[in-house]
Image 1 (tube, rainbow, N blue to C red):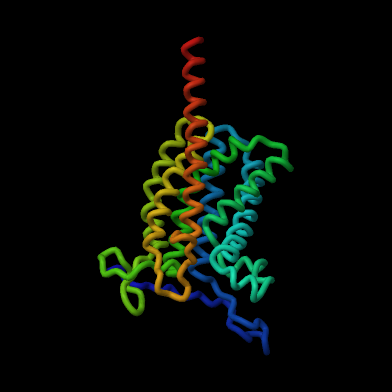
Image 2: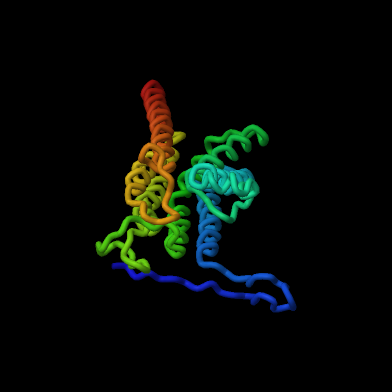
Length: 272
């Protein structure tokens, strides 16, 4: 099996280094946070590179990234508390505002979408071009972000002794963060390759949704059920599986839009 590797934190300033309670806890660089930060930087670089290729100004892209990043982190935490840990909200209502305590990927998608819609309304700019730039860059970002989950081992799956399971303490398990990172690599490579040529509006949004939704739906059947931290189930499915079905519908919508646009452009070319 794959070894259970734990990368230690790199402590920069020890607790109480400057006297009693200063700082109260160590200031350290965490592997998970480092990889998430690398994913954010990679996303910005890939997006600005693609923006130059398709003729979209850099300033709106950077501004848009701020909006969807803030929306994504807020939405990811709110969804995590409401759908995965509702009892925590009853015990401590302020936990809803502690965004560092937990994140949900689909909540992040929803929050980022809300941020994008607010950006369009407030900035009064067309959403399509910038959304396509981000969507073509996002799968590569997701791979790096999920590698962060894999080093934290925070998505344990069912027990398994298969060669691609991870030797967790207490027995082998699937590491869903690692599996997802690996399985999204083909999507990331395809998106980077395909975006070198002009595509119909909605193409990359559709590609991302139609690839990721079924992948996530199936992977969640491998999530652990025997741990205290096991995901909640609603009618036998995790919140992510219900959200994946909705995401697949979004993908079908944008796919239909992209095909319609391609057909119209082809007809216009023949008429000319």
